[in-house]
Amino acid sequence: MAFTDDLAEQRGYLLRFARLQLRNDAWAEDVVSETIVAALARPQAFEQRSQLKTWLVGILKHKVVDVLRQRAREVNVDALDEGHDDGFDALVFTADGHFASPPADWGNPEQDLSSRQFFMVLEACTEKLPATMGRVFLMREWLELSCEEICKELQITSTNLYVQLHRARLRLRECLGLSWFQAPSTSRT
View (cartoon, one colour):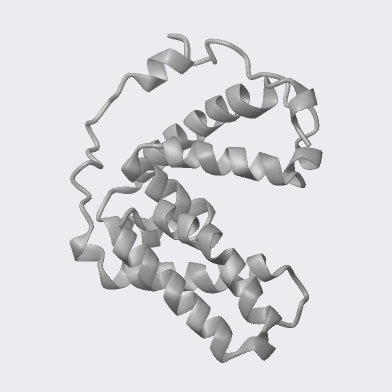
């Protein structure tokens, strides 16, 4: 019974993760349900070499990739326009290609990585990304799909992919800089 309760506690996190990637509530509900059913079907597969959440996210990643492959034609990729320029680069870089303002001192990022609160801020920053940019970033960095797979899945060029990833990383860096690294350290636990 405790395993079932532990699974139920992770459902909210899994659902947020799936929604971030799929950008479709129904698909997210489906993959989370499939993940929990898979975990319930083979509880012995959880060998406690990692946390339950980590094990479940591993299952969920595969389910999300399956949905992305199955429903590729249903996904709206019109917003991924190669010619689209939102002026973001002009806010970050000077005319000679250098950063307009140097990045803030991030202290000891390795120590922050172990912080639950840091991951909550990172998740919130990821949710703020435009839908298509967030999707591309999550496919590459969280689902660990190759660039070729992402380009094929979304029917975009590698140039467009790299531009989207670059912009997503810049926005995440800015958001983390404002929301975490420049925040008073006394507010972190």
